[in-house]
Every structure is written in C-alpha cells, then in structure tokens.
Length: 131
Image (cartoon, rainbow, N blue to C red; front, side, top):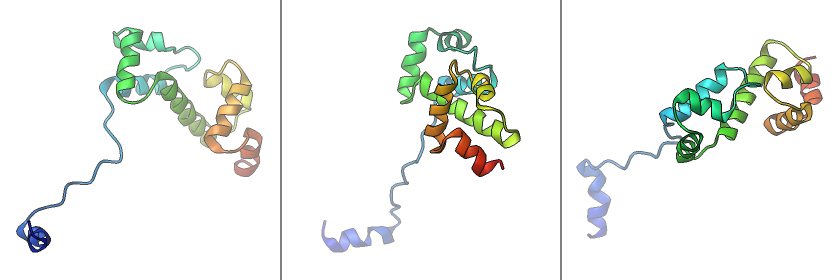
C-alpha cells in the first residue's frame, strides 16, 4: 500500500480499534470470594472455609484466583482496607478494637497494614482527619 491509501483509510469508514479496557471482568469465583469477605466476620473466615462455602477445594480456589491474577490474601487485604475505611468514616475506634474487628491476631500487623494503605501511621491519621 502506498502512503496515500493508508492516509485515506479513515475516510473510507474504517474505525480505529477499540481502546483496551483498563480493568478486566472478575471470574464468578473471585467475585463471590469478595462478597464473602465483605459480609462475614473476618476474624473467623479462612480460605479453606470460603472454598467449602463455594463447594470447591482449596486447590481449585487458589487456581481460579490465580487465573484472575490475584490471591486470597490479596482479596482479604483489600476487604480489610475497605472495611477499615468504612468504619473510620462512621466512627473512630481505637486501633486494638479495629484490628480485632478486621481479623488481625496482632494489633501491630494492623498498624503495618494501615500504614501501607494510607501512607501514615494510625495516630497521624487520627490527628489529621478526626480532630
């Protein structure tokens, strides 16, 4: 093809390819895991119990989540972050109480996760946004 032909293709009704989506649809399994994590008590919900609730093995759960380029731990972390932010918008809680509500066995694990999510310590966040 010559340059003239290439330059005029747009005039002949050829449309450019559609833009690539910025996100991809989650599988039914991943979507269901997220629903469970957002609804249930995070102190009690574990991957094997989620798999059992979905009627699949733990291995199948891991394989399906890997197919969506994610993991149970990643989804659990996102659910904890979402629920933490939601709680703090409604009412301030001491870190120990919030850590327990989010299923952390140690409050320091919660504080490290909170810093990762927000870029600031729990006490810095309290000073900046709550008082």
